[in-house]
Image 1 (cartoon, rainbow, N blue to C red):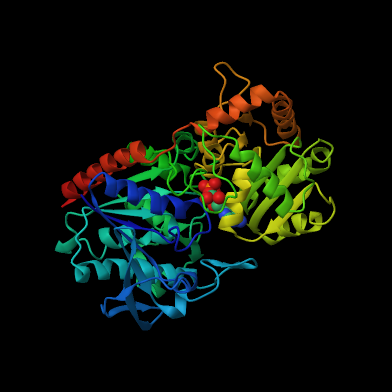
Image 2: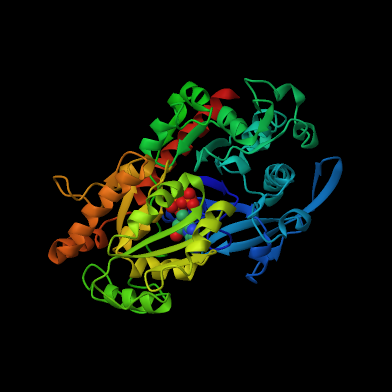
Length: 485
Ligand code: ADP
């Protein structure tokens, strides 16, 4: 099949979270299955800084946004053997962040990603790449199905192109003032409750959910959850209505990119066959972060976007009691200002026991996965979660809330048959601490703990199985598109 994956972030070019990992690992897995897969993403400042070998394709795209005709360019680069098309429009994308700054989102995000959606569809005929399926991801790409079903419905180039949109996080809906609709040149007739309107605003994601041929999300449990009011963010009705076109496919991780045996960021390699190196990574982490050099102290880690979704309020409520336990705590995170403030204040308060790093740092993240014993994800909701999968791959045992993809990938070690981590249900400090105490008890039983780590190191989270499921969905999307013609 000819597949175009469209995403607003792709590892290693640009990343704020798990979407970027998926948008690189899935195409690689699809290419291994023999498909002609390509990627489209914006050419951000952070991408141009990497000095990649790319070539301008001289497409001269003209897209009108907010009454101004804008000339954009496309550059072609590579992710291994996979062509990556970068949309180059400096006024919108040459900025420090992908979507905004710690103070908030960029005010013109609708224009930025509206331009992106239109430009992708304008570019493909010129690139002479006629995809069987467009795989779209999150709100940033949500207008593409709207355009294909609307103003481009008679375009023969796209007559055989199905669309699949994947929800990586329903909490981000791409909401903008109503007048954005006309600024983006969309049909005003689309602005109603059964269309793109969401409580008086325009929602990019709603457009994608209404008009894509198939909808997927990133775990079976989250797929069920988002059809209920508690997790549906107001979209549960639409999702129930599209139930037969909706499916949860669990994310994998790219086991080559995340491999403690080959990871150059680590001081010592290790694996299920040779787990000894993990201890050296723990020592190095303690030294590097100014923690007491004590191998018997369990290191509890978090690597996360600092967003309330991630259950930081639960951790914050548990904090004084957590510090009464015998452990070291490491956090690497970036995001919302009020959470940054909470952790910034802790930075120098617990010398030798707590390390807080505010920022995004891939190499430090790898060292933390390798050097930690326990990996905490107390999320309120978690579409899939990659953190717990990477942690397992690096032998750091997940301690997570039982929700979404966490519930699908972590099984409790205190159950029979014994699982790979520790789970808690209620979103409370007490429940978190009870699960933590069970984990700490296991940690003190060193042979039991070593068995747990050995089990984690030999688990398989590769993409292949999920990639095959995506191919099935792509085929279905293409069939339903054809039936519409
Ligand atoms: P989400 O996509 O909601 O942010 P996931 O658990 O699915 O959460 O994916 C998070 C990914 O981003 C993981 O690869 C994690 O290692 C990485 N990550 C998150 N925060 C940071 C950070 N501050 N520095 C480096 N990597 C980070």
